[in-house]
Length: 325
Image (cartoon, rainbow, N blue to C red; front, side, top):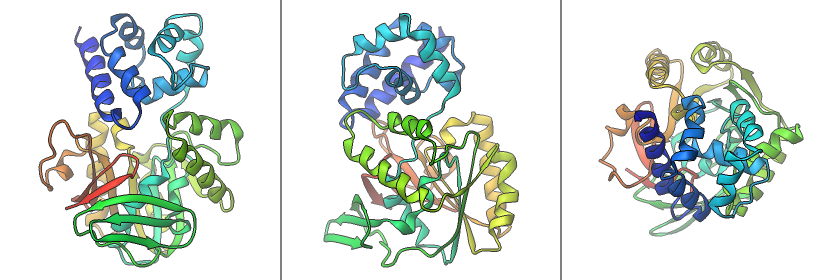
């Protein structure tokens, strides 16, 4: 019964997180949290595969309409299509590669002296490794701030954020992923599009632009476990510039034990002067960083942007806004 309660709580949390961003997902998650039969279907999956975004994307990948009613999702999971959806859940991962987050990451990158050698852990297709190829429109309390003249990423900013006045000098870019996606592979990119929330046409269009950017100069993505591959990649990158290890909405998918192992690993690399560390994760994912900033109300589904273990800002999960601390 505890497992059922955990799944229900995960979907209620997701419904709260999606509220205001995706009416479809807020409705689906809220209804699923009260649906014992569907929860039992999910309970047969490994715990790491209970993620709402993964389950919903797999269902959409197999034709469940979104926007659309919860009944269609329910019938697909419990009906003849359920086996195929289950296989997709087991063989795929949530690799959203949301480049909109760069609008909140860039002020953290700007605190670090370049040229930068960027390493993204959980890089997926590596789309977030190109902060220098975008322009940025930040809307602050005192007016609009624009940087660059390429395709723009928009973000509302609260607080006295030190918004950069120039794009970063990126000398090298690479990443690590258990299952790297190939920007030149049509099926991989179709899966990435499916992971974009139903109502988010702007994000879908931005994703297509990001794929074009990455295809012009594909990044080096190492296939493997970040806990074992990171030190060697940091060593490789160090000859190109100041190494910055970063991640956004990735560490949540590690087990609690591996989250602690990763934190100890990267803190050790920072302490040894091997790299800087830019983190952007949900408020409960790395509690030691969240604790360095003001308390976030329980009902607020915020990410915490950190630099070398210190909270800098509270951010929206898709980069739509940032409150500088």
